[in-house]
Length: 200
Image 1 (cartoon, rainbow, N blue to C red):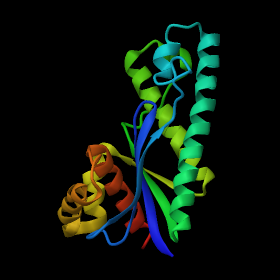
Image 2 (cartoon, rainbow, N blue to C red):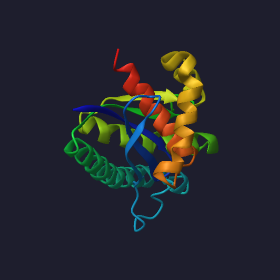
Image 3 (spheres, rainbow, N blue to C red):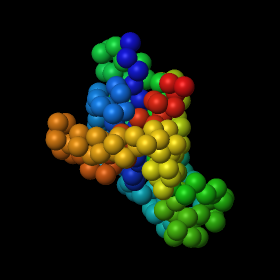
């Protein structure tokens, strides 16, 4: 079985998901998808905290619970599908590199809803938590990597080869086709870091 790792960059309601394998100097993209974690029929699902801001506390809690149930189900279905497809092709998924924001601890819900900046932070954490749980449900351990530290982590793991690894990742768009945006590139680098870390 060949080793592989997931990499994910999460947005509001969706995530760029990449599965990589092979040598970091010549990585192979095993799978990549855009995972959608909201149902259009659920009002306020894409930005659950923005929507909750207009509600009283009890309604806000109910709204967030409803959104969480939907997002958990969709994320689990999508990630299970990728996991099954990858393992069916004889790959063993050793981990998932998830890109994080600042990583600040969130206060209680009333405090979050009183601050626009915290609403944005909470939404990022909401969808990352859903993806993390779905991966862990598939027994794939998740390693959080702060986005602003991604380059440093790459250097720590790959040493002098780090710039070459990043170049290879950037150039993969030519072979795998679009979309190969910053989302996929960052997710692929996070996956390679996790896979290389777990080799030691």
